[in-house]
Amino acid sequence: MQRPRLEVADIFREHGDTWRESQRGHLSRAQLKVMSAIEQCRTAALGGHVLRCEGCATEQVSYNSCRNRHCPKCQSAAAKRWLDARQADLLPVEYYHVVFTLPAPIAELAYQNKAELYGLLFDVAAEVLQTIAADHKHLGARIGATLVLHTWGSALTHHPHVHGIVPGGGLSLDGTSWHACRPGFFLPVRMLSRLMRRRFLEALWLLHQGKRLKFFGELAALADAACFRKWLAPLRQCEWVVYAKRPFAGAEAVLAYRSGPTCLNNSTQLLSEILGVMPAAFVQTAKLQSTPHQGSLGCGPDGGAVNCRTPDTGQSRSVQHARCHRL
Image (cartoon, rainbow, N blue to C red; front, top):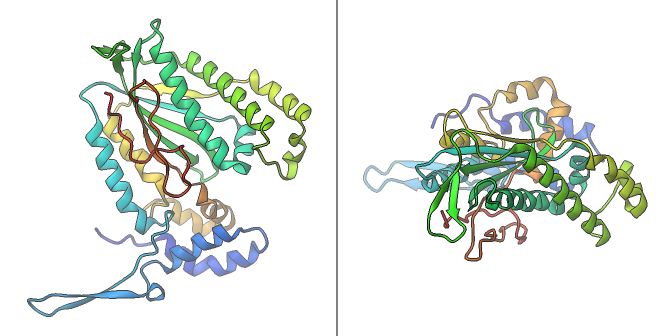
C-alpha cells in the first residue's frame, strides 16, 4: 500500500510541541501518551529489527510499531480484519442501517462518564431493537445486529451514537422459521425512539441513585438528586434521533464505512484542515481515548444479547468478536 503524502504523525511531529505548550494544564496524561505514541510509531525511537533474505542477503530495517489503539498505522490492519470477519457474517437478505443518537445534554454528561454511558447506550440500543422486533405487531422474531459505537462526528466534535447493521428479519420466537420484514420497511422509527428515550432515562436515573455518575464543572450541581430530576424533565419530552433506512449501496458498504473511523485515518481530507485549524482539531484528536468500539450483538440460547469482555476495560459492553450466531 502506498504511503500517504501526509500522515497524522507528520502533523504531530511538526506542530505537536507548540500545540502542547499552548494547551499546558488542559491535557490529560492519557491524551499526551496517545500523541507521543503516534509520533514515535515506526521510528528509531521504538527500536527496530532487521529482515534478511537468505537467498540474496538483502537486508531491510523495519522500525517497531507503537501498537496504540488510536494509531492509524497500527489499527488499520485491525480494522481490515474486523471488516473481513463482519462481512463473512452477512446473510443473503436485505439489511438496514439503524442509528441511535444521544441528545446534546446527555452527550455532555457522557463525556464525563464514558464507561457508564457508552455502555448504557450499547445496552439500550440492543434492548430496543430486540424488544420491538420480538413484538408480534411488528416482526415477531429474534434478531441479531452488528453495533458500532462512534463517539465523535465528521467534524471531530464529541457526538456519541451507535450504528447498527441489522438484517431485515430474524428467527421466529420458537426458532423454527425465518420472519422477513416488509420490503423497504424494518421497524417503526418513532417507536424505536420512544422506547430508547424511556429505557435510557430510566437506567440513567438508576445510575444516579447508585452513585455511579460523576459530575464536574458546569454539571457539578447535578450530583443533587432533586436537581438531576429537574434536569431530566425536558429530556423526557424532546425528540431522540433514531435513523433506520435501507443502505443504498448494501450492508457491505455500511460496514466498510463504519470500520474506517475506529482510528484516525491517514488518508482523510481532514488532515489538511488540521494544519489550518490546529487547536480545535488537535483537541478532538487528543480526546481519542473515547475511540469507537466495535462489536456484534447476537441472540444467546435464551434469546438474550451476547456480551464479551473487552480486553482493555474488562467490561461487558462493546463486544469485539461475538458473532450473530443465532441467525
